[in-house]
Length: 81
Image (cartoon, rainbow, N blue to C red):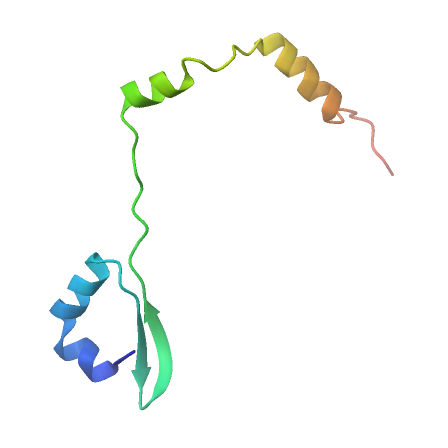
């Protein structure tokens, strides 16, 4: 927990804590008023690593996939009223 005053006076230290993954509950006069959390950063996988991971995956026959999806999803265009 940090106070509103700490947020104002020690913003650099708090930003460092956020960079390190720390979260803060901000209070004003002892009452919680907000929360500071680090943004979830996306992790990108290099193209070569992704290609290698999927190299052993079975091939998908697109026509069969489409047929199966059409059979599963009701494509009836008639109104149901």
